[in-house]
Length: 276
Image 1 (cartoon, rainbow, N blue to C red):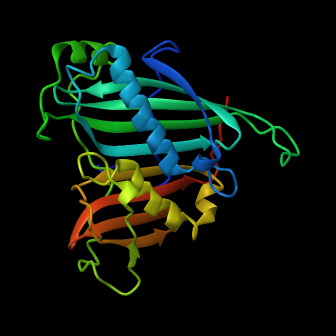
Image 2 (cartoon, helix red, strand yellow; image 1 turned 45 degrees about the vertical axis):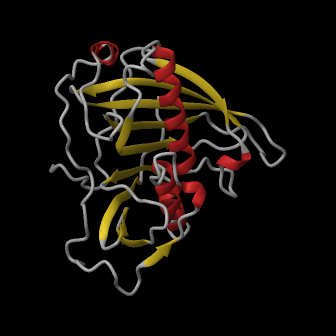
């Protein structure tokens, strides 16, 4: 298997070393987090991950020593869907690191409540995630993680020489021009941008959710969503989306000024559901 994601036979994300490992928190799923079918959306999950990362930094005392991080990749495995109403428990830990970056796992488990629309109890939700975070300085340049930060991250993993390996293709090689019939615009809103004047990482998943409206079968099974960020997107940019469906996989490329800013895939496992 190459460095690029190759279809439904995808390896599962590594489990936590123990139920006590890392940082834990809980939150309530709100109606603004879900789609009309009450499913917790991918962009909402991505925002949960960002909020939990910030809370983890504060709790560990590293908000001063290692305050700046950027996300290079986000992986979301929907094992058993989470829907509203629910309480989500999040466990966050490091599953691999180097001196300047780390893979951070977050396991989301949900206890579903009952609503008048439920004819029977829904199974507990389970979503596994992993994000590749890069430590940067105030100017956005990759920088060494502090000694204290490395000590905290290393306490939950034996992988201390983590290397980058892409899980998406950076551009559709067989369609080199990024302005073709069938490409569609994606409107960027002022609320999509963060204090650094960059498109928020979670906002890219808005484009993925828009596309999934045309591929509901992917959401009816266990599925993996992967997005990799290649370059920042500034306010006032015009984004174009190219997409391609092949069997159990949807591929997407989000371009700005003829350059791919991010690539995403959504892949389903046809026969897989939560077990055990």
